[in-house]
Image 1 (cartoon, rainbow over the protein chains, first blue to last red):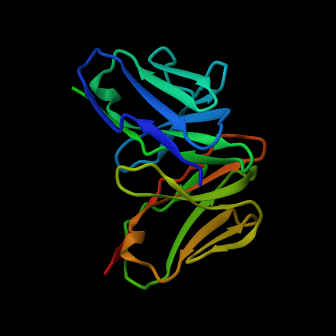
Image 2 (image 1 turned 90 degrees about the vertical axis):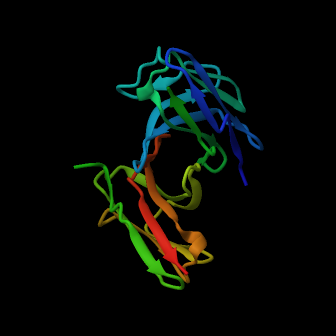
Length: 115
Length: 111
């Protein structure tokens, strides 16, 4: 089956620093990847849609200058949380769309804690 | 009214029970319906993907879609403790890439 990885699986950082999270589709090419955020006991909230080679499309209320997304290849998208603050602490999950089946496969998530 | 409504539970059943999980939706443009399973602190795992109204079966899992009632269900037969997880329904409109998720139902299967 289609596999999506994320790295790191967890990260702790100081307030004001930037954190980069990688999302890779391991056995398929993904022209479209998605970034979600999930708070405890809440559902997934879409932050942005990332298309290979073009600018990401952000959902309403998501600061594009704070959450930088790069989709440089068909198997890799990165999310950089810039100048992180404690309120950015959350579980960040990416997904990759497998075109032939039009199915989104999710990564294992990255838990970010900002001190 | 939210686009997708899902009872968050929690739902607790004994091992071997039949579990019924449900979602309702308001957007008639939704054409594709999915069920994901999410273990604690993990990413969602796709269980079932359906397009049309009717039933789809995969092992112990059956997904049911009733577009006329805007209602979807996931049935788990012979439930096992390993089925304990949060189950998320998700759906999308034709021509759209965006998934809209329910809040998820937390299921516990007791041995």
